[in-house]
Length: 107
Image (cartoon, rainbow, N blue to C red; front, side, top):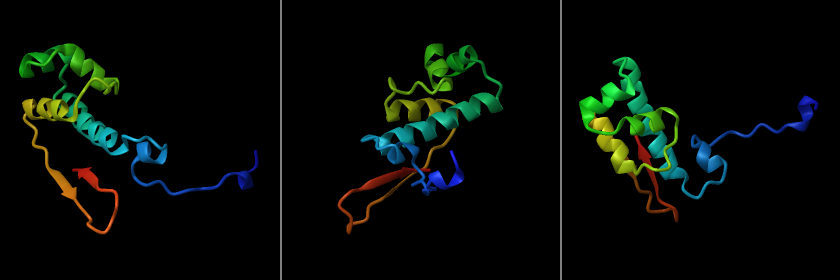
C-alpha cells in the first residue's frame, strides 16, 4: 500500500469513542483508574498477593486489572481499590448545557 491510500484522522482522546463503542466514556474512566492501580503496584513493587493482603481485595482482581480485563469491574469498585492503596482520586464532571450529549471526564 502506498502512503496516499491512508487518511490521517485526529483521535478524540478516547479510543473507545473513536472505535464507536456505546460505553466509551465509562470504559475510558475505568481504564484510567485501572492504570492508576497498576502504577501503584509497580511503584511499590507489589505482587497481586501483597496488594490483596494490604487491601482486602482478591489477588485475582489485581491480576485481572494488570491484564486489562476490566469487564467484571464497576467504576466504583475500581475507585475503592485505588483508595485502598492510599491514592486519592479527583473526578471532574463538566456539563455543557448547550450540547445534547453529556460527557464525564475522570482526572
